[in-house]
Image 1 (cartoon, rainbow, N blue to C red):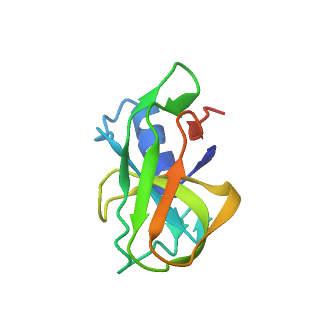
Image 2: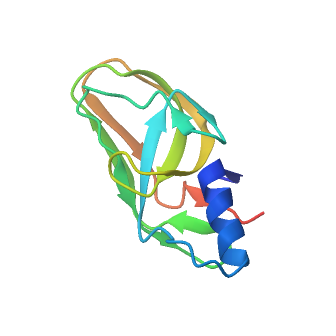
Image 3: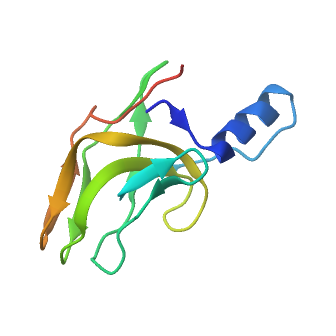
Length: 124
C-alpha cells in the first residue's frame, strides 16, 4: 500500500514540521468496494457480520502484517475490491488504501483471509 489518505498526509506533514500530531497507536484493516485519497476505502460492508481486523505489523522500511487477518461474514456482502487501514475499529480516520490483488465475491456466509506478509505498507 502506498496510497496515503489526505488525513495521513496531514499527519505526516505536521510531524515533519515538529507540530506533534496525535499519531495512531494501532491500525485496523477494512475491506470495501472502492477507494480514494480523501476517503480511504469506500463501500465497507454493513449488516453482514463483518468487522475491521486489528493488524500488527513487523519489519523495517516496508511493514508487513505479522498474522493472518480473517474477515468473517454471516451473509452476502457482494464484491470487495479494496483494502484500507484505519486508526480505529469503527469510525476513526482512514490512513492508507489500495486495490486488492484480486477482487473477492462474498456470496454468503464465510471468511475472507489475508495471509501473513500479504499486506505490505511501503514507504515511498
